[in-house]
Length: 173
Image (cartoon, rainbow, N blue to C red; front, side, top):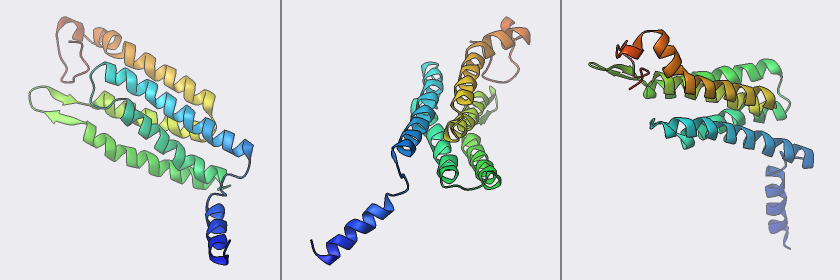
């Protein structure tokens, strides 16, 4: 092999050296799969209910959040700096959420639950990315229960069961 080709191979090898061993490969794959699967579960629930943001959106939010915190964490960045990354992720998700919330004159405001679900999914992705898989799974289960029981149970308690609307799409139809 020529000196030029050998240098190219060495440079490519060095560029992919951020994952040093089998344990780290396993850790990265597990965290990303966990974030993707948990995001997909929440996205599927929303898509099944006909909401605009579904499986792909929730998966990408969860995966993106996981990568944003996992990369510096595995690189040895300190916890103080990781918290700044987390603040940036949450702020960025806020801009995404703003697009999910729509104000309508007649129907009130819609998209609040979708925005909150996307925000929660980012938090779940960050937990998975930091290796807090049990926290991520438990949070996903609680979010699913909230999605499932929220509009039926809490809507009924607030008086929306009698066809009264308080201006949001969360009321049962």
